[in-house]
Length: 309
Ligand code: GLV
Image (tube, rainbow, N blue to C red; front, side, top):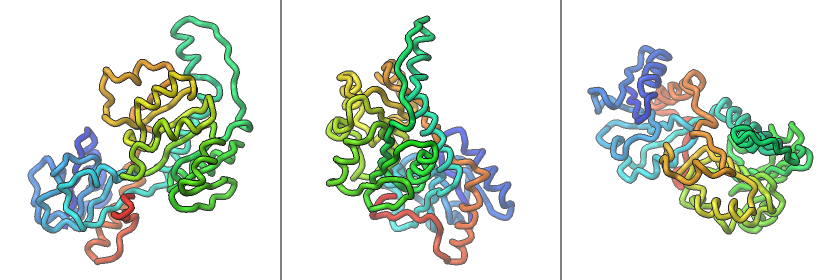
């Protein structure tokens, strides 16, 4: 039994060392070093190169190092019928909630516009919004969406949420299904996308959906770039239907330097860093699952392959 860490960013050694430090009895390898492929029972991965999950004859669990697993289903060469797990972690949820709160407050108080004014030496007071007058609508009420919704209510926002299956969250008005989506959108001033990316949600933030938001609505995408139809967003911003957008995720990451978002005054960007797995916090659940593989117990935080999340 052993673990292989597969990721293409600079954090591969960090993850390998953190797993090894958490339990020195486990053999942990990075996929770029020589490693005994038949010993590997668990792959801890993040945006792995397509094809790199093949060739492990005793693999029993593909563990995403983040909350999202869309990139795993996009790899047609992945071994099928192997359980996939994802991270469910209190910091992953609270970091997201804090990020969304920060973005919404910056929008209400025009902080991004003032930064641009400052760079242009321009003194230009603007009307601001009050929390009590703003309805935040959250698309997706999973672990991250539900906590974000609840936290926003404690700050005094009116909060509503839309999800595939009906959810009950105290203080949050919930909507479900296609019929209720129209009512949800019509009454949402700030739309936050926290849906999982699946074939059913790909491109959901399109012109048809976003034009149902009231004039001057603001859009926040902290889920996946694939949810957004970029050209539709730009069209609605330029037509002054939407007042702005804040994006953390993109179709291509890092975002190519020539992309129109970089220089659009109404698009505010962060580099997919709204909420990032903290190794100290998430490694215990990975190690627990590693031992569960050995004892044949049911793994925690299993992904439903039919739903894709
Ligand atoms: C981050 O995007 C994650 O899925 O954890």
